[in-house]
Length: 108
Image (cartoon, rainbow, N blue to C red; front, side, top):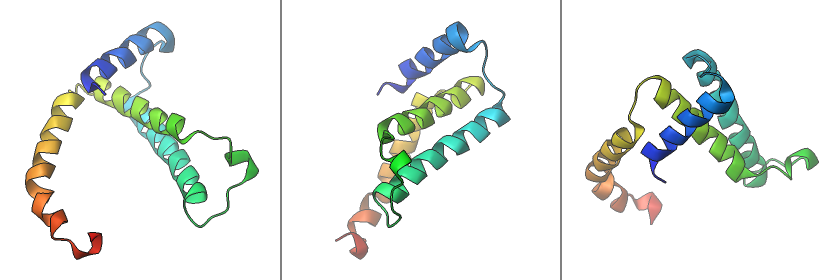
């Protein structure tokens, strides 16, 4: 996924279909709601809770995409180049965590 291009796609969509961005606080609440929907599916489909009939048709991929969409909205409206931030974070994690995870007995 090209994050920079995805930010542009979301920005164009907002301008053409969404009228304007919701404010940051509203989008944060929206993100929390979407993450909750992902958690519900995972808890019931992969966890120990039983899945309700009404949840069986829910598409985890679509719910994850909703999370990504709102994250991209938040990045756009706060002036974050999410591609640059993601690349930087991956570099940090690679340097910091390579040996840590290889030496973790719980993962063997």
